Image (cartoon, rainbow, N blue to C red; front, side, top):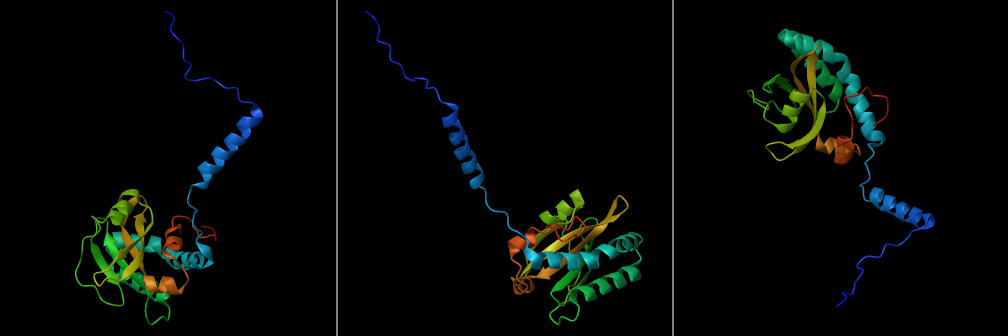
Length: 197
């Protein structure tokens, strides 16, 4: 008895004219499913430039004085930075915290005084800054429930990590400035400010 052969798959020949539109559709679907990247916008870029123009010039001096434990000079630098960032704003939307190379608070500049030293070395963002020695932006909630946005900058003295400076920004200030969380998070503080994201 002869077995009936059943053909499950019959190869078809595609012409080049049929393949090109098919590939074009697959490419469009593949690239069209990606979320749009948020543009920082002019307000966010202006904020980044303002912060960098105040922060970048003092970082080498702050790092060197902090490494050499020159408390008076460190205090003077932080006071100047705090005043220049907040300018004449009564609400003082910017605050500063200085951590040692392990993430322990050394001093801070805020509108409400923080007491005692705290160890932030186990916080993911601080641990990442200490490990990668790169500036990282993030957000966090304070004990009272208020949200703040932070820029964590490694203080490098030559190749050695001297500490970390945290620059915090009040979320209400960002909102009033027309800067969304997504826009803030796209800002790159690791490159010179040249007006590009």
